Image 1: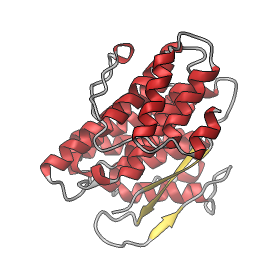
Image 2 (image 1 turned 135 degrees about the vertical axis):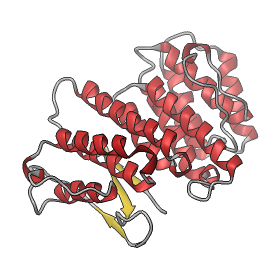
Image 3 (image 1 turned 60 degrees about the horizontal axis):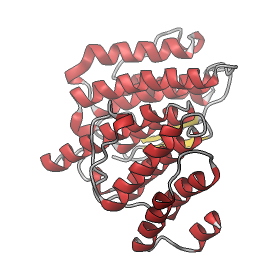
Length: 290
């Protein structure tokens, strides 16, 4: 099963297989516009979400508020619980994604995005409890994306921790549904870099975030367990076989070189040394830090 999260700015949408839990493999890419109507992609996505949870859409679906639709789908999902398949959880996540994308933007944009991220994380929790072998990187990625966009870097880091620990469980159990996700190094590294970017972007107002980014980058470089005191509420996790690329080093090094604060020279030297050992001290990185 292929489930792809596509993002544009703070917006996101899934590209998923057919709504059936078992059969057709052709993919549908749904986009959305405002306002919703029977011909709009967002209306189609909501109908698809109801199919995924194996429920008939309400007759007044066309005039329902996006939040009410997402709430309705999550309620159905909670009622199904043990009987819900992977597609049902994806349908609920996608409904909250559509609701987030269509929500009115305003002065409290970050709070809005984080609020939807919390609703998605709630669905993710249900998925872990009731469909653990079906959890995929993309399911976590949509929540990480929302938290980073809402400048809640530690919340995004918490979801990364959940993702890595869950993928390890799947690998050990030899899951046939979600198994193999741990070997998707490219997509996992994207999530790590997204977290690093989020931590760096909020480090000017919270210097501890830059220290956290440094520690996460070192955990990736040395393949050691990530356990950082300022992020003590986050369950320890290991970046299994995920080593940083030049972009990873560039984001943290540039922030350390340009921001005022308690940045030690030996930390800069350590990162540059690690980049060299991992063969990432290339023209791209050198140009970024020159």
